[in-house]
Image (cartoon, rainbow, N blue to C red; front, side, top):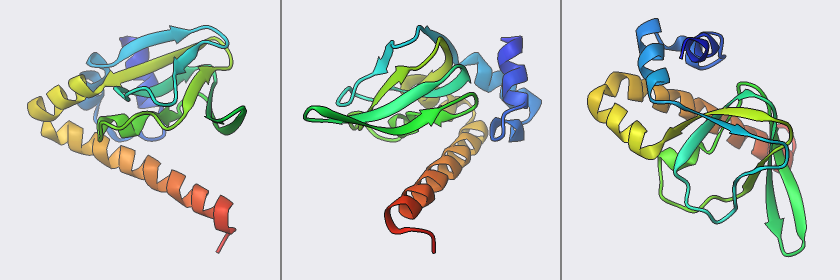
Length: 148
């Protein structure tokens, strides 16, 4: 757990949590290890957890008929699957490990417990997720329509 707290302290977003909040947040994170080419989740699966890349790289991609298209490559510190904390919709893409990868994960159930137990931390996590989602939306808009 100490290395997870150290990781959060140095993270571009989670460093804004206080040390106490980082400890409480790290207590509900699970560590998941994937080998190269392991599927983390499939397009169409029900989303049930958010992931933070602790080590390694993850490919996010969509499959349409016989083609697949890479949407993003996630590296250390990147967060993905965040929408699963907010809704109960199926995953919109696949995720697979490009290298041996260590992920920190939080399930919707654990996040809901955190919201009930400590709404202040949950509110800060919501703000972090909003920043991540906003950044992605802006990047998508720039890719689709060019820079303004």
